[in-house]
View 1 (cartoon, rainbow, N blue to C red):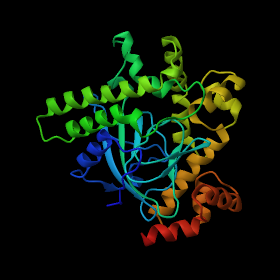
View 2 (cartoon, rainbow, N blue to C red):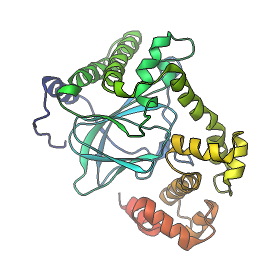
View 3 (cartoon, one colour):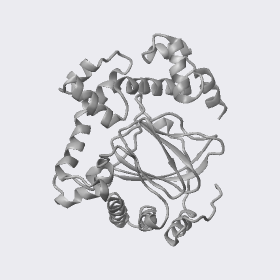
Length: 328
């Protein structure tokens, strides 16, 4: 287990959370089998209880490389050491006890660095678990931290006294979710403490409050592009111009480019490259096919360009990436 040390940010709530986590099992971060061809990370969430809590241990030697994205909402909390978390074109430096509100539709991943070793709690849920069109109007407040980033800066609740109520809620959530109790009490307790955690986050980020109509518009913007994301999943190796993409979602090219950057955190070209490279990495991991064949299948007619883009995304050439995977 990674070493944990007391620091000036420790509070009774944080220490209680760490104590509760000692009885839980943290698995190596290995999600390759759950990534689809465009890098979307699939987690099975049932309509009756669309909540998942994953306990991972990230190390330099063992964690799944490459970016991912997903429709569900997510919180990311490191327990032991620093983490560099990339979302779109931004890298967020996290310390133990920080709570990150993930920009879920932006391509994101954890960056490696020497000595990287930490346990992480990842809380994922569908927004409909908290708020839908039939919910009381005030319930949308619970989701404001995910949709109200009007200043475009990541939402991070830093560890310390201000985070103590959120840490207490997270501890109660973990205890309820992993309790060996009858299912209805597990589900009821988990939802109650998830709402408490989201309430504390919403209170902290109240400076970014938005009107309800603006909140709904943010959700609709994401949903409007879903048809395009689905098209890219099926045809990622084909050429796709901004004009063709904007027609697919019935938007002008200018409005489309602005909306796409807001939702995905990158340009259309950068996103297409990400999807293709994610598929190429999957093929390198799971097959022994020639690198030139993989480059052509994933939409890169020029292998030297593919090599440069792959090296930029994964930190090594395709051949070195494959050799490293085989050694793990």
